[in-house]
Amino acid sequence: RESVRLAFLLATLNGNKLLAADISGAYLNAPCAERIHTVLGPEFGELQGRTAVFVKAIYGLRSSGFAFRTFLARVIREEMGFVPCRGDMDVWRREATKTNGEKYYEYLLVYTDDCLAISDTPSSIMDELQAHFLLKPESIKEPTRYLGASISKYFIEGDPIAKWAIGSQDYVKEAVRIIRAKVEQKGLTLKPKANSVLPNGFKPELDGSGYVDADGGTFYMQCIGILRWIVELGRIDICAEVSMLSAYNAAPRIGHLEAALHVFSYLNSHDRSKLVMDDAYPDHPEVPECEWKEFYPFAKDSEPPDMPTPRGKPVVITVYVDASHAANLVTRQSRTGVLVFVNRAPIIWYSKKQNSIETSSFGSEFMACKTAVEILEGLRYKLRMMGVPIDGYAHLKIDNMSVVKNTSTPESMLKKKSNSIAYHYCRSKAACDIFRSSYENTKSNLSDMLTKIQSGIERRRLASKVLF
Image (cartoon, rainbow, N blue to C red; front, side, top):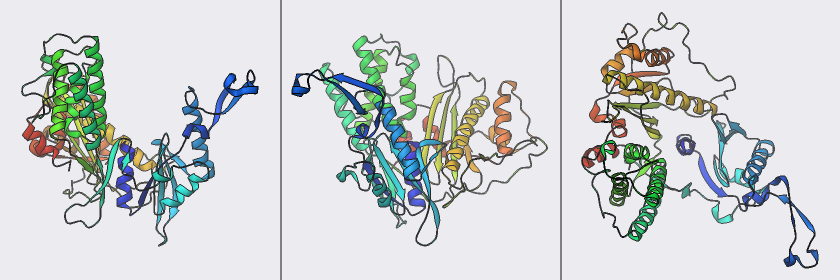
């Protein structure tokens, strides 16, 4: 879904259009990947008893998905001239030129039988697909729904150009309806509204209620599965809490199940939200460059050898990083939160308990910084392999001044031996000018909502800066 968000952003940024389509009877287009036969029954009349060999990948075979993916890839590559993006093999690019002579890349995103074309003339891509596959006529249009998300146009005040928006409200409403029905079957009720994501004062690790029975455990896993997909659709405001509750999938307690149902009550009260793929450039102050050559003479930003020539407008990356030191009151593990923007569009969000136990806030923040830089490197690779130019360094915002100094001042000294790997890793990447760090106050650090349980007012204050 990260690639889908990037596709919508790049379409607006470069003035391209989008068309979506569904392939009808997808598997039946591909030749069977293995020899499959059956003996015909009486319903075939005089042919009864004869052996029939399947030549197409019918639904129900283990190899049908593989056969269709292979066949579709061959058509896109050999017949249509697209090449797969090494950062995501289901994103295909092709060199193209607009009528005004501007060179750019056309993209074709494929998820099973769902296709999304981004081009100055996406209808021509659909015409090429139709030469090999039957596309459902009613599906060939600007997307209104893609992979469960609601797609719409959104106008930001002061900007006459419509932006693509990805919403989860339809999925959330249906999810709440299903969960409410299941809860009522058990003789319980779902709260009509909730102001905070989790109950006030609730700590999942401290819950001492009894374990749920087998049916309750299955229901809990269903709830968590639905919530995790809602997070993937863009509900960043519940990401941290869903991550915390996911840790108890193997043996949930009654309190954990009640907390999960409380999250659905919160969603029922706050079901409207959209991620706007805003292509506007952020207004960041320039961060001075430091001289790192004496400390890391080997450091350099290595470009992939098979990277395509960048085309189109460049993008600016902003990374918000935070860590809640020793947030887990039982294990004292900290939690990392990372929120990545490309231009002004939120593309990646991450909330996870750290594997190590850090004895200081500095240590937990530096481990979070290391994770953020790893995510940043992966995103830079994907953008480069999509042929998207990157405008200079990424702005890494963090609310720990010690981490800022240690990643921006070469002369700073490491005082914690246990953090030496994260220390040198982050500094070597700073020496490559992949990122430059700067201080961001906790009150305005958007990744703060990805690391801890907050009051409803505080969570909505931060979420309102990301969700519309």
